[in-house]
Amino acid sequence: MKALRYSKLNIGLDGALDGEFVAAIELDGIARDPGLTQVTGGGIRGIVARRALAQLAKIPFEFNINVRGPFRTLIATARSLEDPTNLIQANLPQMIRARAGTAEPESETVQPQESEKMP
Image (cartoon, rainbow, N blue to C red; front, side):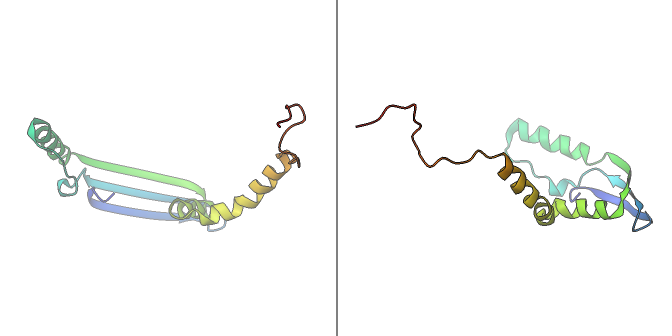
């Protein structure tokens, strides 16, 4: 998103906070800001890459994105993308209990009885 140069950004929110929620996002502008994209290296490869990026920077774009779902779930999902702490805290106890129930009991002896005795 940082490399995009957009002339229009509209965000529309509609719905009930305790039910289904719709977020509509509209973007349009020019594909890339060439100042944010650096090409390393020189020679023919560097020249071609710089020219290709310069041409890509002129391509216009238009995105219309609609996200529909339960409001609290959408917010929790968006929040977990940046900081997964709440997601981990909510699921970790269940995962530990599930793993504890399936783990084999540890035996007190390290060497199984079938193995040979060492001097």
